[in-house]
Image 1: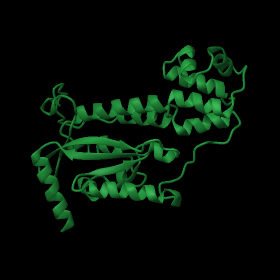
Image 2 (image 1 turned 45 degrees about the vertical axis):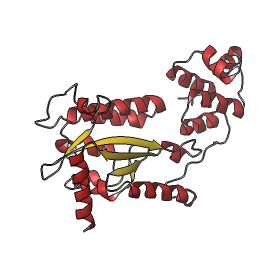
Image 3 (image 1 turned 30 degrees about the horizontal axis):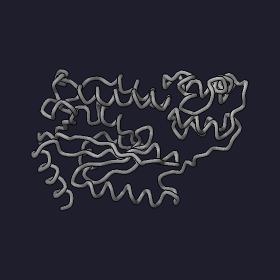
Length: 269
């Protein structure tokens, strides 16, 4: 099978973003005729033109590099592992963010939801998880919904599962990453834990109806109610940094706040 041309890739991304040629041409400040020629292969786009169109389409940096390579240009964005010396300062920032979030759980993940870094409060919540699921690379979403993972301990499993699958679907559509699509299918195939309560449309009503908390049942029977937030780097110029996300959890009620403080104190002791 022949590799896609840059014009074909641009057309795929334009259609994925549900933009007409006229709309994209207007945003990129070029003529619709020229864009049509680029997509059909009748015109050869410059490196600058490809990057301009990719910017307007919100193409991920990884895919922008692929677009450039398809046109015979060198990649524009580097990709370094989180342990690379060049990312030492960034790794330090992430580690400080995670540590400063204690006594509440926080973690950093890559584009496929593999665990990169975590603080001690998060590690305390994983006690009793099947050891196979904790072997690197640890996939956070698999760990959450797997029947030998956190699934049996999630009080609002159906609501939280729906939240995860919806978010993963959006991410897969935005990035066109087949690995994420495959992960989504895998997660959908996991069984619902025995005894899981029915889906409640009003499950988040006590939080104003605007968020879905994670209700995690601890071994001692206490229920932690956690709200999650996601932090990403602004204007990244490195593929790894663009795909990295920090997931932070906050107590949704006073009882959870107290329980997390007690767990942190016990862990420190």
